[in-house]
Length: 430
Ligand code: FES
Ligand SMILES: [Fe+2]
Image (cartoon, rainbow, N blue to C red):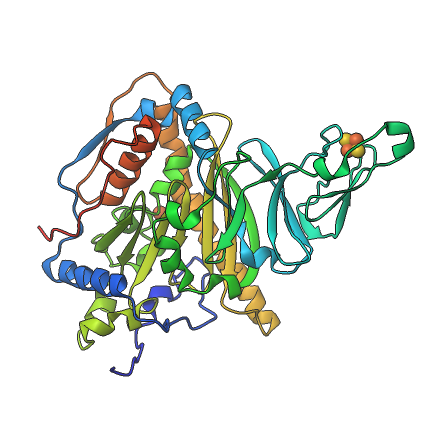
């Protein structure tokens, strides 16, 4: 194999004015990857032909129906409660005894790692009369004592003690543990289903994509922190990470400096059922791969091109930065609001105060671009979606990721398991 030189670190070079300056060198990964080789090959072909991955035709969706309709919103929230969701990252609670709380779709959750290292997700609700066991956002605790009448639970959910039990009456403690939700972790991500008793099989649901994400080793990365941002409909948040068409325009003075200087960067997509990833790169970074044997393209991932992952329905993970954002878009109470939860991780703990300060600036910069540019525009489109004057929005042939997202979402909402499943066909190069 040719020695990788990485003259182009431009996939995460400074972008002027944003405050982002790479601290850590990233890549190369250590495992050959067929899918990545093929996507890189397609990307280079697109670059050479000045094409991109195209859908067969333009798709239309009514702006009010999709982003403003209350009934549809309720159906989406109901769907979210039936399928696996990302509720956190392994790096934020690596130690046995760690816990965190969060509110997801109105449900208060308590997530713990017990002393054996096993993760649990519980309703953050005491089985006596429903009080939350803690209101701390995160911490370490072997047990939780309810603030209402002082029942005590272990971090494995078991009821340990009933206060003044001689007065309360007989309680079968073994059956009054916290209400537990299906929960697991893989590839550095924590998953749960918000309905007790449903089967959680992430390998089946994500159709192999978690094995692809596992290559990055995010469970061993250093946790920088979390941020919440309130914005418009959750689907707008997802869409921002499924096309590069907007990058040279909306992000003209920020992200575009790592893009292509004018033309939308080419994309090559791969679907895993409703989930997908695509690769993209600057033209220059692809030029710098000319001498690489196509079977070794994977050695240039992260440095010459990057993959962006979309875990259906609501998670975006753009790779190829030394500060990775794992973003989950959580629907709000109405169609016009959602919360993006950002988790930021970096390959290793900073060694100096300067490094720590720069990493903090980097994560702030990444969030600021999204809030000031993407979410600013999204809020304006939401005003249209909230109104009565409807019209069809168009998703172009070059917006193949958005088409797949909406087709997949419609497939789930229709609820007909026998209907053909949406797929992204391999780049057509037309
Ligand atoms: S509600 Fe928790 S002890 Fe009463
Ligand atoms: Fe964007």
